[in-house]
Length: 373
Ligand SMILES: [Zn+2]
Ligand SMILES: [Zn+2]
Image 1 (tube, rainbow, N blue to C red):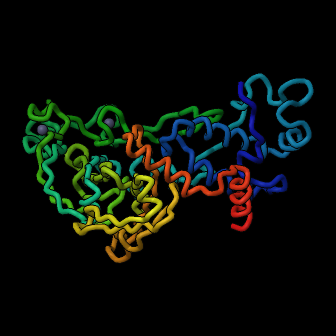
Image 2: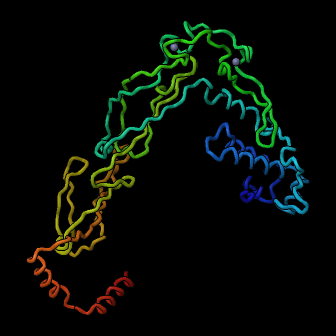
């Protein structure tokens, strides 16, 4: 079993926290990690941990014992064989009624609202630069016209027997060490209070069919990897013909460019050059993402690894105002083979360029340069 975490640490409070602090900390953490609200894998174990910590620290005897002995009191667990299930905290009481009602059709998002849908859409760097209006034909779930989305053949329904038409049932539930009364949506009728006499044939009773829809999507200039565009009401239709449809999210995937790599508004590229180009300096023009030419000026005596910044030639921000920079990383591209004449020329060069043939002298000079920098 893994090491148990400190109860104060779990509740993110000081050792001196009073009852009010504890309750407040517990409220906010329990709201955050309640498994019905939090999809993370560890939400349930975190929630249990939070409850256990609160159960102990909110009981003054247990807290005193914990403060003295921690998790390993002499003589075994002070909490009895039953462990923490001995505790019975009324979560409704602590978290407040509104907390639970928001799981089951509360005010924030009606229970019948359809799910959101996420689609990935790839664009090129050039498209991200200018922004683009895309006509997209997408298969999307839509309300079945045969049953107006109710899923019932001819729209005929009867009162649900499991919940007598209430749509909700009350159940006693064990959440971690605690027993609580919880109002759940009725499984039989999915909270509708009514069931179909027989299922609609066009949608097999789902109330939803998949149809191709044509959408116009505007991707703004400067769009970046992972950007999400929300198209309201184009998600899954409201369940059983009721409620509002969810939203459609289009997540931008930026295709790799041949040589540019994007870093927020800057564009980074590597420029492989021959030795002579680095020594003598050079100028290039390459096609740029904005449709113009990008002029790169390499100063003489450049080193492999040096960078050149070309201001204002990077990506625009989402309002198209400020552009980032292009950063060019110079790289010595060492040829694998030399022709005889090149080899001869290089050997002559060696004598001319390195009049200081003593490697130790050069090492010392280089170290001096670094110290000065
Ligand atoms: Zn139907
Ligand atoms: Zn029911």
